[in-house]
Amino acid sequence: MKTIRMIFPQWQGSRMQPGAIPDVPDLKDASLGYILAAKLLQILIPENSNQKTVQIPVDTTYGQRPIIYGISDRSTIVKQTKIALDTLSIENPDRIITLGGESSVSVTPFTYLAKKYSGDVAVLWISALPNLSLPGEADPGYHNMAVTAMMGKGDEEIVSQLPYQIPPERILFVGLRDWERAEIRNRQKELGMQNISNEDILQNSDKILEWIRATGAKHILIHFNLCILDPAEILVSACNIKQGLKMETITRIINDVSNANDVAALTIAEAMPRTSIRLQKMLDGIQIFKDA
Image (tube, rainbow, N blue to C red):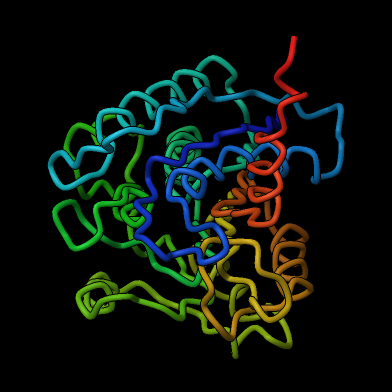
């Protein structure tokens, strides 16, 4: 089994509004903070010489950020999606660990593996947010369209690139607690997509494991959005949504799923190293680092 670590610091899918991160008020600093986050995650996860690391290059230019067909930075996302898929085609991995980047970085590895395993996959979307938006709605950020894109819904040029469409009955939300808009909650209900609440998994992972068994899927794809974590314990994402899960709970869930199934993908997304961004900005202002 070939496992790769895909460093994919895509930030263009996040369209932050002023004041979204009070301690990082500059929108450019916050947006490009996803790039720093991916570098830090690469350092923080355990070393493993058996897992090859591949880097997906992303555009670091922060400019006008045009909204085209209801999607911010659409042309860049189209380009970077192709680069990621081409890289996966060359590497031909059996398992993919993705270090992001915002939530849309799961779209390419998940649909790639869904095709590789002929649809015999199930997705655990562990997140406070469902990411079920569509182009042209209130939020033009592509990261909020990640789940709908995986299902083949959304921008035609983007979804036509994706190797496979994962049906809604093969996607389980874990820990949703902020739907943002009523239309998103209604869309989840219309699609018949289940959500296991935080209360249901505080003591054990049984309901998640039961859902997986019911699908009959052999390969599990896990999206771990750091916004699921309780900000009272640790604040490491752009979101500050109260009453999240403890770190030990997330560790237990992922390990329980891994012990009972083949976890073919794990994404860590939406890391926002607030303190490191501020420190980096301070250090960038020190002249001696720039002298010849």
